[in-house]
Length: 403
Figure 1 (cartoon, rainbow, N blue to C red):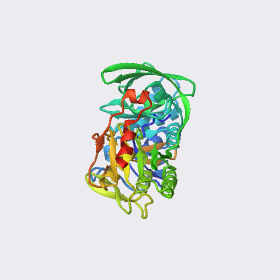
Figure 2: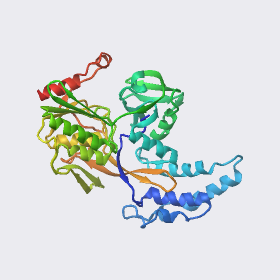
Figure 3: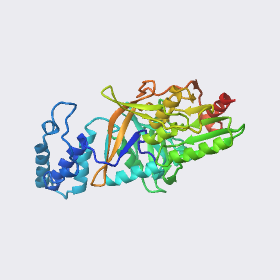
Figure 4: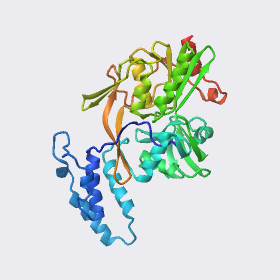
């Protein structure tokens, strides 16, 4: 299942890096284990200050955390699961940041997250996000149980197996929806103003991140379903085939692509752009980095249209913004999701991961699309009737523009 909120542009880091969550995490783990500060050396490489203000130790009263744990251990009438306590402390700390995209993942959740990026998962096959504190379907995956059952982009999930989702984080909701292949999950939805209920049978799902073909009229069609480790190489292989067959134009389709790895989006942009800025990252309004493409793009100069919709998010929007701002692609479809932040994915010694918002990203022309999305040059609807009758007016219009 890919319900994992991957409307997230991930920037992976193998090297250890100090951040608020990591340092506090280490200290809290030490408290719970009864070995105070023993594990801090695994994380701490430099003192952290919060934007030049007070240091972390002045902001957090760790003694109170230890006191709560001591009381719980002394008073609780039952057996305490130490791993659950540790994960609960970490989750509570990170969740308190108030950012739906800043998340602590246990070892199990981290493994599931990596499976999602790799395109192999067990579940219903839908990407979820948060909007106005609602749990929203970003997009169902093509041919997934979710899509076959009728789940749509924009559906608000209000119940999971009868449980209200009001106070659930995306990751908690994902874990509740996720499950063994062959089992059912019941979702209560709001679509527009209409309440609905869907029962979906989970399945094992493997989805390639890139699909390509040559359409009638010698038009290359490149569909990217997510941005993962193999996306750039697969897209490059497709690009070389397009070039060898002298395609007249290219339709690039990122509809219902919820995002993924930032580096993959930059490399895909490099199939069209020659040493150009793809995206700028800013912290507190200050540009901290600009990511550029390489040289000698194989698809440079080939007319291109790009399909986007409400399910195009994060890395998809970075790619769309870059190709559009540099005048390479005309955007067709519906306005994109609107997710303008960058997350860093940090491996933790306990097997978990910290996914933390580290910057806001901006298109080459300086626009941040958070909560606004990217508007297409040509807006084209894809109705339920179209979908039910295997029609795709958006794709048809993209091909027409190339002709």
